[in-house]
Amino acid sequence: MRATLFLPLLLALPAAAQVYAVPTAFCGGALVAEQFSTQVVPGAMGRADYSVVLRNTRDAPLRVLVQVTGDMMGKPSGTQAIAPGQRVTVPLGSSPNTPGRLPLRNEQLANAVRIGCQS
Image (cartoon, rainbow, N blue to C red; front, side, top):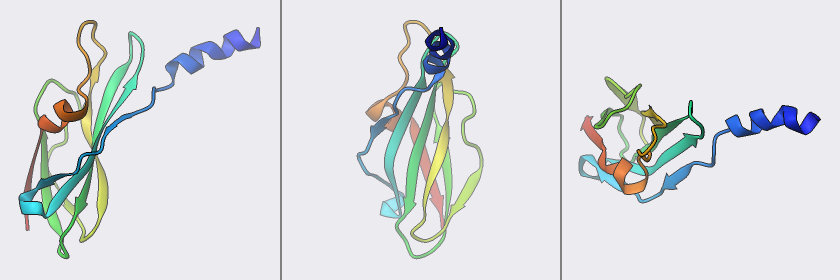
């Protein structure tokens, strides 16, 4: 009886994130996207959450503008400062689970991200 009480909780837990760990240089190498991640929460009311880990390779602060193409909610807006050598995780937005439509993964996700830098 107790196991059936916990089954809905287990089904609501997110699946393991799929990570695309192919370093991608932006801004002439001043910024590196170390990995792009897709975290899928399964089910009819589930969603896919996207993020990227950015690292400032310079010894000076860097202002970064991250834009995401595609149909997502909660896309990043505005610029953010990344300190010298700092590594930050930037949420890229989310999309609801839709029948017949797979979440963005790997290179698809990387290709949907545009990054610009200001010194």
